[in-house]
Image 1 (cartoon, one colour):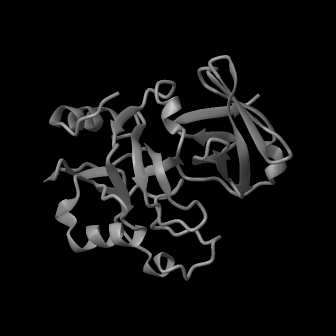
Image 2 (tube, helix red, strand yellow):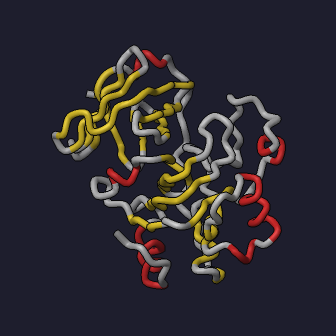
Length: 245
């Protein structure tokens, strides 16, 4: 695991993550998501694929080797959104509200990484960044690292996100989806559960899923959230491309 915010690590990320070549995982951080449904995590991971968040929560680190992810160890740090929904922060949004500014699967990746302060509240952590943004060790905007180790970074645009297809009935998505390398088999059942086989390991991940139009949201039994999109009969999820068997 890579642990230091070094120039060499930034170069590795720039060479391999921009354009979606390798996922980027910020691991072991306290996370303020800004999402009323998902909530916050005392210790969790944020997984990026290109310009967007593709997974968040505890347990994502267990798949880092499978996904050939670049891992940044953020133990001792807190991750907060760079754009804040103050109405939600005050508890005035319904729990089902999905903020477009939140650190949540499917949203543009925008967050700051700060040194954690013991006992600090969610509101205080966000306010600390907003009132003193120079405290941020790293800032990510739309998947681009714009501040690294406290210093501004020249940015480049990611490849355009995949356009989604028209909505079709969700029951057409039940069954087994297999990635192009036959490594991951994802089984979607009619009871709203998924069961994932990885490299021949059965039940590597299991949890619940919801399909809305051509978007699928996952909540793994380990506690993390992820999402995918169906485009022309193909499932795009966490850097993988799946076809239905």
